[in-house]
Image 1 (tube, rainbow, N blue to C red):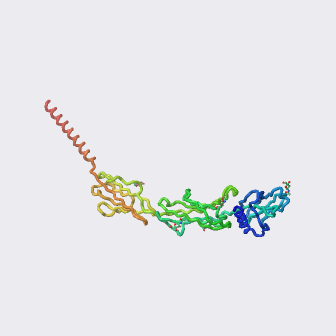
Image 2: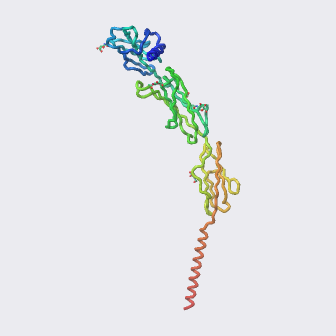
Image 3: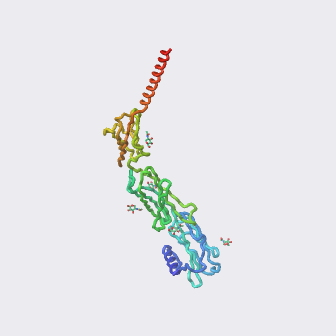
Length: 343
Ligand SMILES: *[C@@H]1O[C@H](CO)[C@@H](O)[C@H](O)[C@H]1NC(C)=O
Ligand SMILES: *[C@@H]1O[C@H](CO)[C@@H](O)[C@H](O)[C@H]1NC(C)=O
Ligand SMILES: *[C@@H]1O[C@H](CO)[C@@H](O)[C@H](O)[C@H]1NC(C)=O
Ligand SMILES: *[C@@H]1O[C@H](CO)[C@@H](O)[C@H](O)[C@H]1NC(C)=O
Ligand SMILES: *[C@@H]1O[C@H](CO)[C@@H](O)[C@H](O)[C@H]1NC(C)=O
């Protein structure tokens, strides 16, 4: 079974390699030729090199290193393969020797040829202009001309937070352009937030020390949402002393910025279109229920505020003090009068 699989694999790989004289290749034999390094990860168009050694005693047998591209040379039982510009997407040099039973014992040098993407871009699918809270949108990251796409990891970001990672199911070794999608549901907190994506080629220990990474541009989400009251509401009812100023606040956040309409206790609308209704000096006529209606294109929020006006106690105290003073003076005068009379 093992033998069958290996043979199958080799035959499979051979299909890619035209021009080969290696006829029957046994990849399971003992004393296999050894490539150094055992695999290569090369950027498309870069130079590369590897060597292959066959066992010392094989010197008397036929052995060779074959590759459709590049140059080969031999020194003793070691063979060298070099190429100045690797511009083949599929190339796997084969190193072999003929065994005494005339079977070829061979090793294939696996080569991963990579190419960082030409361009990485992010967008919201089928969408321009403002979006709405609570609705689902599809973020899309397009990675152009990347190879091998099976070693590509795409990460979507919201600000500095990673939202999700995606990988391709495609195993084409040649450059491909692929689009990755992520569904997101927007909330009001997403208004003004930047979205972007990152394409990273993870090529493993034989690859470059720093994996090639390309980032997209950023796109800013504009999220429309209905007005939401800022801060907490006043305890009800709101009490104010007669003659004192009254301020009612129904500030709300919304996108687009909301407009305010106030309805007075009389039921008539106020001329104020501000978030804060100001009455400079409260009278008993200002008592009752106020309604603040905050609205924008998306929706309306309504707040009711009950106001109670109380008589100002200050006057009563003042009258009391004045009365007490007058009585004291009167008692003093009466006292003085009797004193004077008794003399
Ligand atoms: C071949 O290898 C031997 C031993 O490693 C070395 O001394 C010699 O210089 C090499 N010859 C060439 C042509 O590289
Ligand atoms: C990358 O792709 C985007 C979207 O197609 C395009 O607007 C941009 O110009 C491209 N950038 C480069 C450098 O090709
Ligand atoms: C995103 O949502 C749409 C519509 O609900 C669905 O058809 C699609 O499969 C989803 N895509 C992903 C990547 O989850
Ligand atoms: C590249 O991707 C393939 C398939 O996912 C995987 O088997 C291989 O280990 C990856 N290579 C590296 C160097 O990570
Ligand atoms: C109204 O309330 C908001 C939210 O609590 C606050 O930021 C704002 O300063 C208040 N305005 C006034 C005039 O008190």
